[in-house]
Picture (cartoon, rainbow, N blue to C red):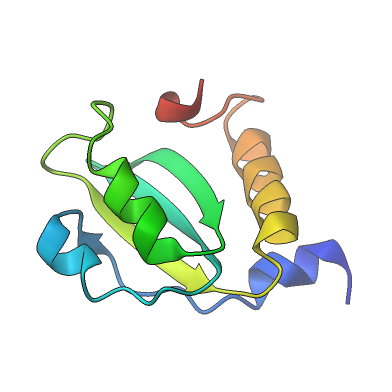
Length: 101
């Protein structure tokens, strides 16, 4: 399997409202996640514990009250995140999501 297959085979959740109630239902598993608002990706992240990372992100002022998130469970999140960021940069003239610059 090549690195591109890592991102194509991910099973993403539906978009979920970014708040403490929704995050409380997220598994404490390794994976990757994306945050967006107004159909614009703000952040792409990875974690050994998705729930914990999303709870910490609630305090980030870059993510407003209208933000939503989607996640995918994977045991190779550290490799997958690199591919996701490369894909994003390729589609956006080499730029990272706004909350990652």
